[in-house]
Length: 130
Image (tube, rainbow, N blue to C red; front, side):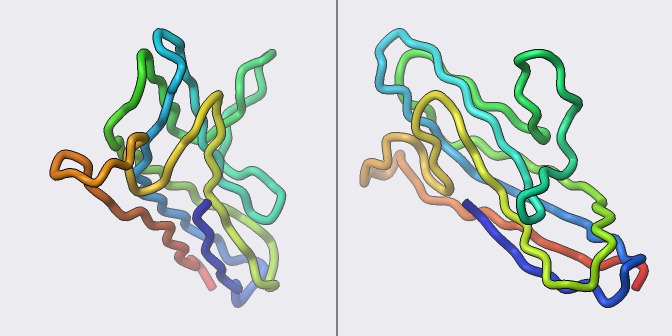
């Protein structure tokens, strides 16, 4: 889970959200399929998600899939211009969920070896139009 806070100076301000995320997955069921999704929330409100359609997950711009075991680290970027209409402190968070383990900043195996590295992720908030 990644979080960042910002306090807009005017209710008319917009918040530009930039996310760069490195993630990995672990699918321990041999031969099984894995899925994962990501979402960004302002408090408890999802922002920038797609429209609801039946059982399809509402998410932002990334999905993860894996067959037959571990994956190496993948990266995803996403941005969105939010209109929170607030001058209160706002907390934005990036959350991942799926049918197995999803990790930030490392691959699913997380073995100490030259072929398994560690990475960094970021969430940046910029007030626009104050």
